[in-house]
Image 1 (spheres, rainbow, N blue to C red):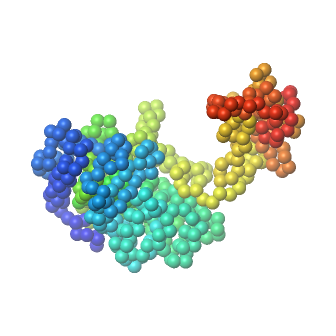
Image 2 (cartoon, helix red, strand yellow):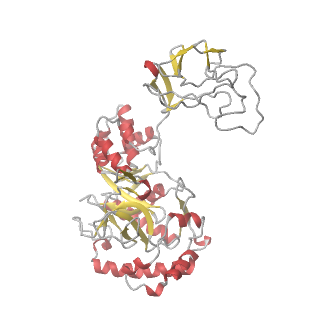
Image 3 (cartoon, one colour):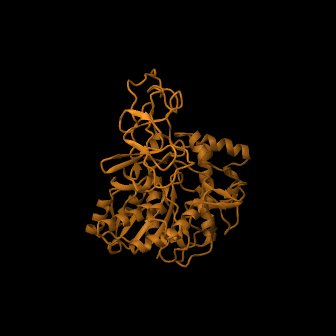
Length: 493
């Protein structure tokens, strides 16, 4: 049984509701947002020209560049006095996108999130452990408010702190875990390291979002935790999580709540609307957001749509899992390749370690020392997966790195310090290594690969580095020293 009757409404009645709400949104944007007013005038369209939902194709697009150019509040349709809360994107690709919420917007967000969780199989007597980050990121607060609106119990753990996450899953008997797919796999690994069988955890479902989610990764998560993995979709520019979600019955596409968000799929290059079933860039229009009425926002996500009724009885349009983004497309010998396709191939390849199958954006676990194989079987140490580095004279960032085993001949060394006469020198405690221009320094039970990071008596002063001079005047060192152990140099053979 659906959470709200509108989920199974007739398509004709749904389109009438969409048309009315689109006209209200266009009117609000035209009156309160100068960017939309200027673009509507240029396109020769106004609020009175919206007769049906099909007229949305006449409206201009909104892009992430618009958010950046109008930063921070140029796209707001309300005064700051009416803003109840503000969220924002991470800003990793530029200026963060600031998104306002009125009291009514927050109520809509709670309703669509409660509807989404209900479709995923969450019920009022369940306990939801929320491992999404709180703060400006919309994930934490979106799941928190939606769980409370549904009447279920929320455990607001937030992101990270994996050991505590596992303890709470066991002690509180959490039924549902909400997190990213990469963190879900990481949590399963950490449980195994602690001697806990992840399949024995009380979880029955995990609600996965905030990252691309492929079918091979779904199978790996479900096998690792013995759960049902449900994909959820959303973005801050529209409202946050809760734009669409899979249902527990069919898991055949993500149901888009069309009474609040109108979907289109367009050609990424031409902007032409594509028919259902064809993959392209997802475009969404917010039909009920008051604080920021995003109209025809180009998400950059690649997917396809179907408007056929689902086996669960819901009639809203469904989108396929996001297969990539328009900005991470690679063309290899004339073939379009997305990062998610590479990920799927890596997941299927059992010889690839699980830690390398996850995306680089996964949450990091506790930092720990781990053995690392160096040149000719030498063993160094690294912490948290990153090599320890020491500074050399004139080097602001350090130039010695622990390198994996293998012949490095022909590769470019990190940085080489050569004197004015071009003479390389190493101290007496070093001996030549297997690769040209490298050396191995033995100190106790540890060994370090230097990769030709040498200091000579003729090296320029400490104020000079391969990245250019510092502001301070150059001052030569009193005595030439080895870059690693500080020993006196001798001419290399």
